[in-house]
Length: 112
Image 1: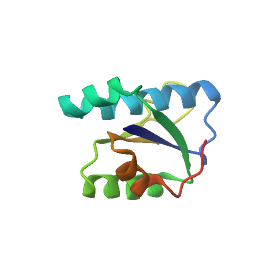
Image 2: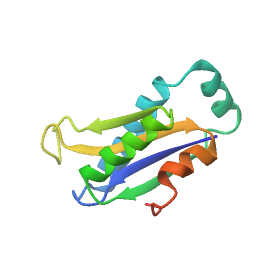
Image 3: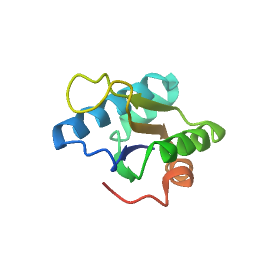
Image 4: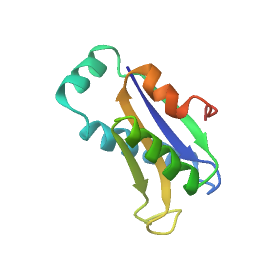
């Protein structure tokens, strides 16, 4: 079981902004996960990986693939209080779910 968080590299997020967006994404997808999957993921160490995406279009393409695979997912839009304009799409979380299904969606991406 794992969760993949995919963050954009093309919008110049600082390290703190990136960390916050990844956290928002992880929690949002987790909240959309069924109880059995939550318990299994929590019991197996809550494995996460943070990956790179080149832009907004790539995040939406991956979210569509995740939906087709039945994986919980969450697109994050920034509130615009600091570095980015309101509504800027920053990150996508996929899972938690079985490693092989998450990898089917995100396996070609590079680590952040």
